Image 1 (cartoon, rainbow, N blue to C red):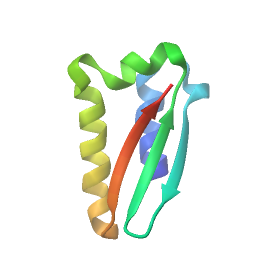
Image 2 (image 1 turned 180 degrees about the vertical axis):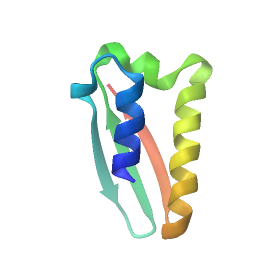
Image 3 (image 1 turned 45 degrees about the vertical axis):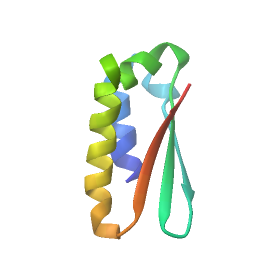
Image 4 (image 1 turned 90 degrees about the horizontal axis):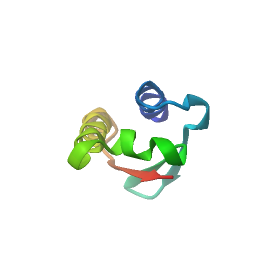
Length: 76
């Protein structure tokens, strides 16, 4: 899952070397913290949050196989 988020985020930003994904696992859930260059935050979020919503939808769909709740948080 971490790799999927990394690949998508690197394709969107101008500074792919600054993309970091940290996974915080709980009992029934996983929180992925996506960290990007401060200048690329807007590109990852998109207009009215559309790109962020699409990224979360892809990750949530892929997580159905693991029977866990997945959240993606975008950090600068």
